[in-house]
Amino acid sequence: MVRGFYALGSGMLTQSRILTGVSNNLANIETPGYKKKEVTASTFGSMVINRVDSQKTPIGTMSLITAADKTNVIHSEGTLKNTERPLDFAIQGEGFFAVQGANGTVYTRNGSFNVDAEGYLVLDNVGRVMGQNGPIQIGTDQFTADAQGNLAVGGNVVDKIAVYGFDDYNNLRISGDGMFTGTNAVLVQNPDIMWKTIEGSNVNAAEEMTDALSAQRNLQNCSQAIKMYDQVLSDAVTNIAKI
Image (tube, rainbow, N blue to C red; front, side, top):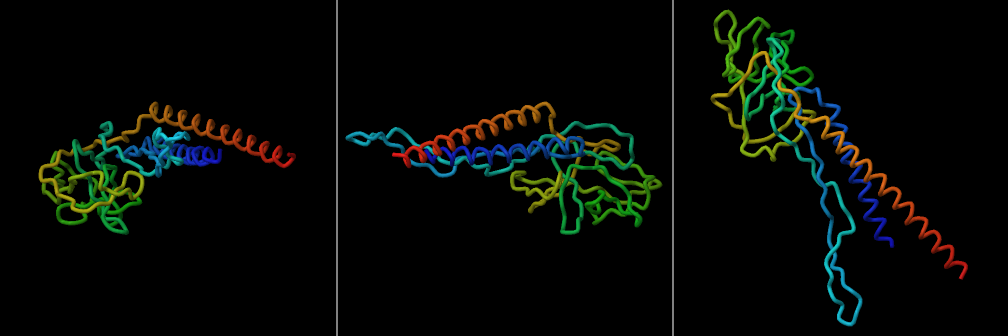
């Protein structure tokens, strides 16, 4: 009987984690370059189940606990939106912009940049955008850009936006909404960058709402079943005491 508490309790925790992930996705549905996060669950430990008879016939295995063990990031490309804003950039295909943050370099698909008081191209609240010669000091928002990320002021190329790729995106670590850290970044020599364009998030609102309703329903079912277990155990203890 008590085994049910393990299964249902862990089920409630797992569904709660899934709901948190869905809520985060929905909250960032308008965040440029945001990538959907997906919580996955797995069983924790297994035990062999035998039928109680003269031969103890094995009938299979079972697990007492289901745990939310990992959060996967879905790196599919979001919708590219033309903004006509000269400080907006988007990458077509694979790759990330590099931004020099307070705790080191982070990588992102968010290309909604600005120019700070010192003339550096920046991603607000994150840091300075990296070019092939270090942080890009553009000095003005009156510039032109080509498909390779070359930035020109008055017809003279100032710098080139650096785009980096990774052999395995699964090795990237989440460092904030739409931000990642990783090692062994490789500079993309011929990136495909769209100017005056932004990449939206790859979150599908309809799918997230469906996942939220499913998780909420499972959470409620687990909660109701635990109440039933508790009532049965309470009755059993009371009746045994009377006997």
